[in-house]
Length: 265
Image (cartoon, rainbow, N blue to C red; front, side, top):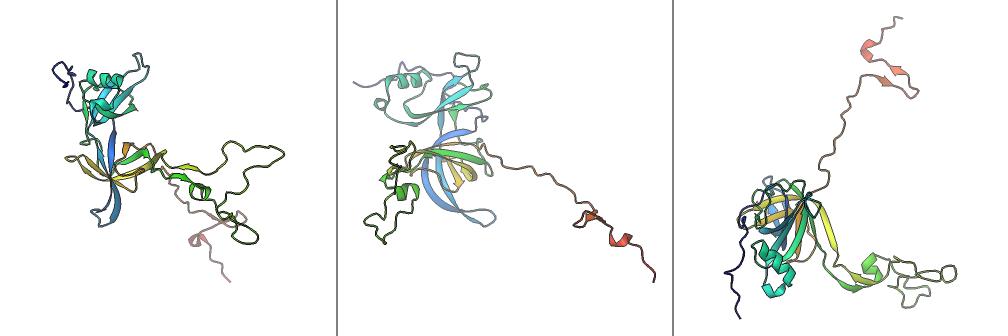
């Protein structure tokens, strides 16, 4: 049985660009390379294919959701890869099968409609700073030394086959159990990490590529979230003008040399 798209509902804003007030995108990590800046500096950069993304749903504070947000989807897949509720919501917005979805809070939802497209063009520029969130590389089951950086036990002076042992986990009598949160061997990596304040070195709006200074969590091909940084870029420092008054260690005012009276002998 073949699928037909004749009765597929079309969103009123299908294909239209979304407002650039939402400075966030979903993307796919391509890898790392090096670029020369206009000043001649060689910098290691992470390449991310950001977008295009589609607006699936717009939530409003005065609606049933009770808050302002925009639901965004990314990366086309086969329809059989999605469940029916998720696929139905995408078709309601006039979109095809998209695997990854992410909700972004916004102050105002004016101008956003289901079916709009979010692209890199006009959303980020060279010199901007962004936060990138992604899942880190998974390393499988690892010991305490690799997972937590333990130093291990001595290899001599009576120690036997305990070089990579974590050591004592708990006392025997007073508690009689291992406390919750004890650092031990276990699954390493595969957790959601956020790298903050990455500078945008280059933007290729035609190929939807953004070049970020420094490493990005996760392997090549992993899904990343790029959003405008929440960190303080400039700390305001009060400029205090030094007065001409100087004091000695006892707190006495020292007059300038020009004001000292000449003493006649």
